[in-house]
Length: 217
Ligand code: E4P
Image 1 (cartoon, helix red, strand yellow):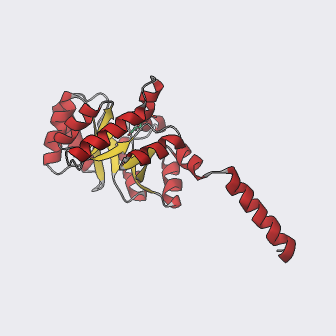
Image 2 (cartoon, rainbow, N blue to C red):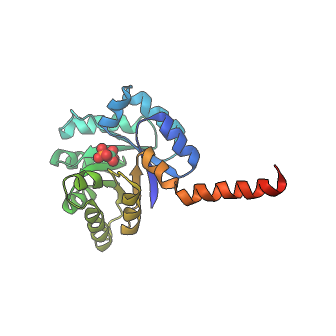
Image 3 (cartoon, rainbow, N blue to C red):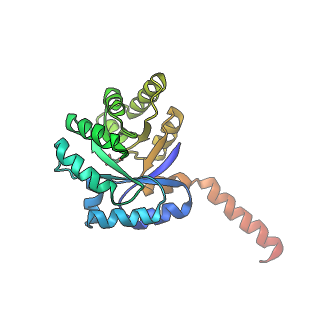
């Protein structure tokens, strides 16, 4: 399973990129709004840091296929690594079909059922984004959705990549990797939490102490 960073915060993207573990970035209208910066400017900056797929979503207020198609073309023109993120609606599927047939990569987002993922894949999506955390929030086990999509795509020989999204903690990450998700898009806080273990810290402390006791260095 590969990692994308799920943020529009440039400082976090730089830190994660320096860590050497991410190969892409996902954003959404809420994440862009949180930064309060111009969409094109922030996306171009992200693309200059990470050499991999960058998902930029159509405006939340654009809900018809025609509008999404026009905006999708603009987003794709920002950088060759751009992926256009489109919400899972009938209009979104229509836009996915048109844009993907033009060679533009589409990430269909807000996937909450396996059937939605199947439809998105059939419309030509390069990626689907099932949202685990938001399902967990309403007492539905999000991981089962990822498992179902993995199984359905395998059975149908579908090559659309599964981006496990709405990841809230390191256990989600392990579960998604075990389920066979292609990618997990994670906030920086989760990536950082994944690096930590108290025995690692204790081990470093002991190595320092033992070394210094003999070499006084
Ligand atoms: C995915 O692409 C979304 O940007 C994101 O994972 C949503 O996560 P949230 O449910 O924590 O807002």
